[in-house]
Image (cartoon, rainbow, N blue to C red; front, side):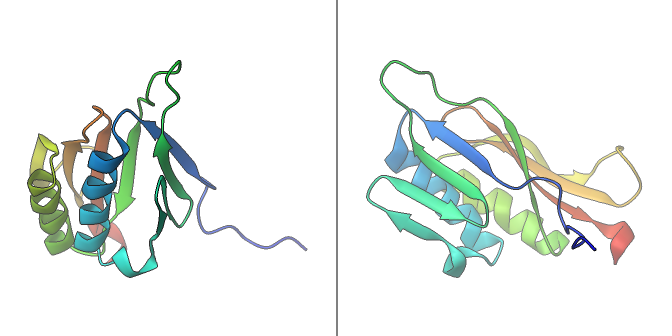
Amino acid sequence: MTEKATQFIDHVHLRVAHFDKARTFYLALFDALGRSDQADSGRDWLELDGFYLDQADVDAPPSRIHLAFRARSRAEVHAFHKAGLQAGGTDNGAPGLRDYHPGYFAAFLLDPDGNNIEAKFDERGV
């Protein structure tokens, strides 16, 4: 018998142009989402629950992705958006309901490398 997986994605690895700016940005997001105490970081890397961040090689471009973090409340989505803006992110969609499906409450930011980063609270599961 196999163990039932709780999530589909095992890990995401982002390679960034400016690691120090990116680490500041992502640590602020993790703190806003109540997860900063679970992050592990070294001089040139950051990891949290399958999310990996490090410096892109000189001859390779930074990653370009859309990444959505799960929030546990609308308040966490708001905190994520505020913290991301204060940590050098760019607004890409203020906190609010989206028309993807009923109860989809999210906010979007561009990280320092232009990746589209989202925090989402799905009210259907509440």
